[in-house]
Length: 518
Ligand code: BES
Ligand code: ZN
Ligand code: ZN
Image (cartoon, rainbow, N blue to C red; front, side, top):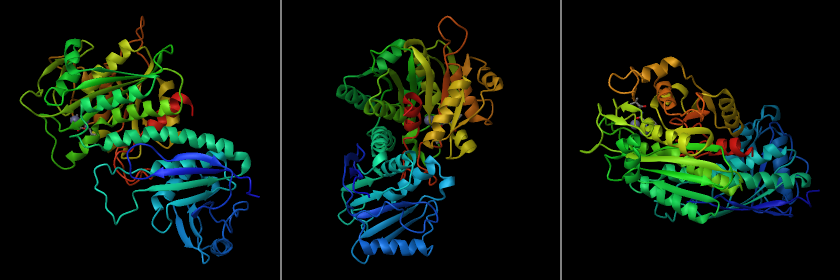
C-alpha cells in the first residue's frame, strides 16, 4: 500500500558552513538505513500504511514494544531499537495528537537530528502515516533547523564522526500528500538557508566578523543574485552625511563602522517592508566598559543584522517577488583614546542631539541613524527593527520570548501572530508616554541615551528608538514601526530545542512568514 509513496531524498551536510540538506522527491518505498518512526502517544502498533520495506523482525519488535506500552511516545521522548534481522529504528514520540502544536511537532523533528549517532548511521528513512501535511512539514522543518553546528574553526577530529559527513534522509508519506509536503519542505529549506546564514554570522568570532567584513559578505551576496542590490555607506560617507550615532559608536575602533543597505527586487514599486538591524560586531561597552564575565558573548550583539541578512537570503531562496529592504547598522563598540565618552553630545542623522550618558547603551545610537535613514530615504510601508538591545529585556522575558514594541496595533498583532506560527514568540511590551518623557528630558540635548534609573530599561530603550521614526510624508503620524528586542532569544538557551547552541537565527522565519505568508 505504500508502493506509490514518494520519498524525499535529503543529502544533509553536517558541520559545514552554508546550506541545509537538499531534498529531491522519489517514488520508492524501500527503507534506506535506519527507520525513523514518528508516533502519536499511546500508539499500540506501527501505524497502518507505514510497514512498507520494514524488515519483518523489526516490525514485530516495534509492535511488541508499543503493544506492551514500553514506549509511550510522549512528547520529547525517543527510543532506539536494533532489530534481530539487522534493521534499526528510532521511535520518536509526538505526544497526544489533541495537544500537538506546530512547535511541539517541530521539536519532535529536531529530536531526530539531535539523536543521530553512530548507531543510526548516516542514512535514515522517516515514515509518516496519519499526519496532516502541516504537522509533517513542521517535523521536517525541525529536522532541518536542528541539523546545524558551527565547526568552521575546529580542526577535524578523526575520532569524532558525529559532526561531519553527509547524512541521507528519505521522507515518505501517503501518496495524496506528497506534493504538498514537497512544497512545504522546499520552503523550509529555502528559509533554513537564511537561518543558517544568520547563525553563521552570529557565531562568527569578532576578530573575523567586523563591520566592513560583514559588508563584504553582503556585497558578495548581491553579486550572486540579479535581483539583489547591496550598497554601503562607509565611515567617511557616514561622517559627511551627519550620522553622528553610527560614527560616535564606531569611531573608537580601528574597525570602522558602516551601514549596509540590501534591496530585494529593487525595481518593484514601493512602499515596501523595511527591516533594520543592530550590528555591533563586538560590544565591550566602550568607555562604560562591561564586566569581564561572558563578555565574549557580546560577539552576538550583531544578531539583529545577522537576522536581517539571513532574511534577505531566505526571501531570495524562496523566490519572493516583491521589494523588501534590509538596513544593517554596523559598528564595533571599543574603548580607546578616540572613543566617545559618557557626557558627549552627538548630533544624529535626524538632526536631533543626544546626550550620551552611558557608552554601553550604543545599540540605540546606531539604530537612531538607521531608522531615520530608512524612514526618510527608503519608502517603507512599515519598519521593523531587531536588536540585542537590553539586558533588561532578558530580565523581563527570559529566553522564551523577544520583546515587541510598536506604534501600530495592526503591525504588532501581525508580528505576534507570525511569531506564534513559527514558534518564535514576540511578546507585546508598552510604549508609555512616561518612558518617552524620561528619555527626552536631557538637560543639555534633545534626547538622552539612558533612562533616569534602571527600572523598565527595555521600555525606555524602545521609547528612545521611537524618537527616530519619521512621520509619514505630509502627515503628523509616524510610519508604522515595531521594535524586537532579541537579547534573550538570539543566543541558544537550553529551552530552545531547534538549535544545539550559540546563535539561533531568531526571527528569520517569523519575518519571512510575515512578509510572504509562507
Ligand atoms: N548589547 C547590550 C545588551 C545585551 C545584554 C545583549 C545582554 C545581550 C545580552 C547593550 O548594548 C547594552 O549593553 N545595554 C545596556 C543598556 C544600559 C547601559 C542602559 C544594558 O542592558 O545593560
Ligand atoms: Zn552595550
Ligand atoms: Zn550592545
